[in-house]
Length: 181
Image (tube, rainbow, N blue to C red):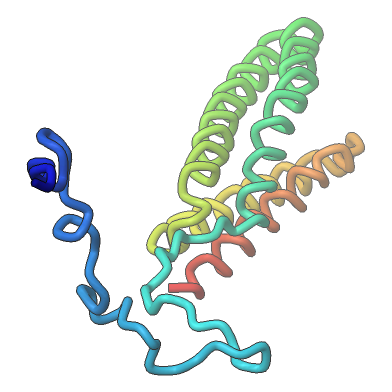
């Protein structure tokens, strides 16, 4: 008699997944259908997925750079202006002291405005909705610097001209940013 056949082994072995039922089947997803609806050849342009790229606003570099320069120039120009105020207070008697107090109050207001404008420019240089505010701040700063240059022309106020130029560039950058909206 012939030998009895070996008992059948269950496929897949116990505890393993069946690759025929778990593997992705052809055309399970319409975009993966084979053959593809259109063939890619070397002369065919690449087909990229159609999604909208997130548009992050771009910084207005004129506002950004002029804001940094404003903060630095404010710190640099603060020292000579306070030295002039102290010299006027020391050598001018009561009139010199009154002039020094007025000058120091003006300097504190101007320094505060310039530092705040510089910080606001750094924070909002990519937001077109803040462009009008930055433009107005730039015009106020340019006006204050113009008054400072004109009032100090007799004593050689040309050292204040860089502040006037930077404030004008800040206002121009604010106008450009406003125009982007």
